[in-house]
Image (cartoon, rainbow, N blue to C red):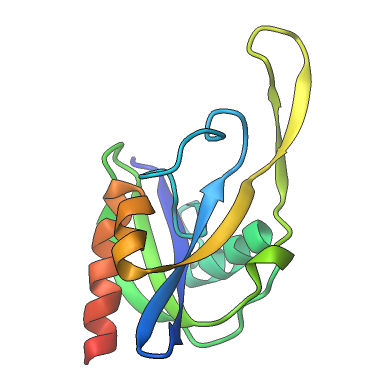
Amino acid sequence: MSPRSAGIIAYRKKGHQLEVLLVHPGGPYWRNKDLGAWSIPKGEFSAGEDPEAVARREFCEELGVEIETPLRSLGEIRQRGGKLVTAFAAEFDLDTQAIRSNSFEVEWPPRSGKRQTFPEIDRAEWFALAEARQRINEGQRPLLERLESLLAQ
């Protein structure tokens, strides 16, 4: 069975421009990667878990902010590696300088026997849709189109 994740695309309107919140993964592998490396805040879940509850939990874990606003479904997409992502949209604003991410531990450098702790998310930024399309993981781009269509209704 393919791994499943649930996440939230937070969006805001700045004047007439729509902006979306994307996060950059932390850790040494992602340090020098930019275009195509960003993601929506999301996390894996197991059978029987409620995707909306998981999306809210992961948003809080990755950004340190609870999101209590209503969520609108953007459906599900399949990323290149096979992971299924269930996404929701929420109009929500936050100060990206104030995020507090959870962390993970990994052996680094590889085969060194040393363990280091890294933030799961090393930064979050607001992007206009055109730039977000450049930055987001290619498999998640359809979520941006779905958000744009949802908001045009």
